[in-house]
Structures are given as structure tokens and as C-alpha cells.
Length: 332
Image (cartoon, rainbow, N blue to C red):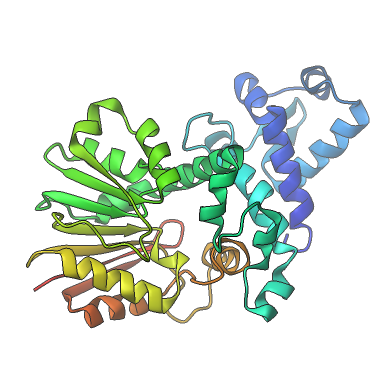
């Protein structure tokens, strides 16, 4: 599957783009002739595509025709913002073209895959401001993955005593929307780059906007706003170097009152750094394309930053779905 993965991955994305999984979902089972009519493809070309999809396991061939595997039905036939179709589209458009540059980028110590994108900025996140269509693809994927991992965040982020949450690197506001909906007394500040905050303003449900403040800022170089009693880094510290992560945690600690919390949620490699594939894929993507640094940090390393900043009662929960972890510390 590793060696043949590029071909099979792109077959799956082609199936998504053609609406094939949607078509099968609506019918349950379809014959090859029905699929030819639906896709308007040459029969032989469709036959080849279906061979790729059945080899991937996401489409099953039976005596009656073709049907979605339950995984495809759950993750690819869905049309909502949580669908994996958004994630796969981003990986096809952004991630995998950059991986061509892996050897050069890793040996040179730079995220040279970024050269395919307009701009002079050092990170992909900044360069996306030059391409609205690409930014939409990227943030739709980030929102989809955030929604896939949302149960872990909602279960393990303790905001029971939180009055105001500072969401650093808030993205399109997906975390905030779900947290505010689940906790009616909670308010929040969303902090991210100006172009991202502009997007968050359009995506946040209107009924929540009176409980939200927006802060356009560069998290690495600008000060954090005061007033929060809980700082959340969700899918943020993995995008920066260890030194930058330590700086961000310290900035969070400094703006918190006594008893305030810092929570770190995201991908996390096993402490022995033997896996898994999602953590490895993210770490390679970050260093080759996105920022040129960072990784899916092990829980022990994140916990060390919180303690070094001055936090007490540091606790970590690993082995969450999608290779995620939650690490929390309290300011004395």
C-alpha cells in the first residue's frame, strides 16, 4: 500500500471529484453501465478507475455491481463540512505535490516545497493570503479535520470553570463555535493572522458573535491580549519549533491570572517516536512545506514546556483518536 499508495490515493480523489461515492450512496449498489452513464466516461477508463477503487478497499464489487465500503459511506459520501472529501482535496492540491521536494527540503533544512506558492513569506499560512481559492481549499480541510477530532477536544478540554477562552491560532473558528455552543456561559477571543480572522468572521454562526472577540495578530511576534483565564493551543504548537513553542507557552502563561489554564491539543507522536502514520505525515508536511519546522510533539515534551513556563498540575492524555493528545497545565 505504501509503494502503490500515490496511484490509489489519486483514484480515490478522482472518485470524490466525479461524485461517484455520492452516486453509490444514493443507490446502494450500481452496475458498471449505470456508472458509465452517470460519469459519462469511456467504459474502459471507468473500468480501470473502478479497479483502483476496489483495490483501495473503499468500493466493493459484488455480483450486483459496485457499492461503497462502510468507511467510504461514512467519510467520503458525506457532503457536510466534516467530510474527508475536503481533507483529501487539500492533500492532493497542497501536501503531495510538495512531497516531491522531500529529499531536497530535508537535506537543505528549508521548507523548499513552498516555492510552488506565490509570495515571499516564510510559511504556507502567510502565502495563502495571495490565493483565495487555495486558502478556501486549505481551511475547508482544516475545518474538516478539526471536526473529525472535535470529540476528543470536547471530551478532554475542561472549560467548566473558564470564563473567557483565548484560542490562539483559531483558524476559521471551528473549535470556538463548538465550544461556545456546548457552554452557554463561555466567551472567547480568536487570535490568528488577519486574512484568517476575516474568514472566521464570515464562518462563525451569527448567534455566537456577541460572545466572541477577534484579534488579528502574528502569534509569534505580537503580544497576546489580556483578559482570558484559559489559553488553548489547538493544532498550533506542532507548526513551530521547540523554541517557538516554549515562547508561545510562556506568553500564554504571562497573560493568565492565577488559576488560569493552558491547554495544548493536537497530533502527538508516541513518546518513543515509533509512530504513527498521521503524526509522521504531519511532521513531514510541516518541515517540507508549511513552516519548515515543528512536528507532532510527544506528550512528555509538551508537558516539559508547560512546567518550564511555571505551570503546576501538568497532566497529559495521549492515545486519543487520530493520534491526538491533550496536555494541560495551571498557573499557580
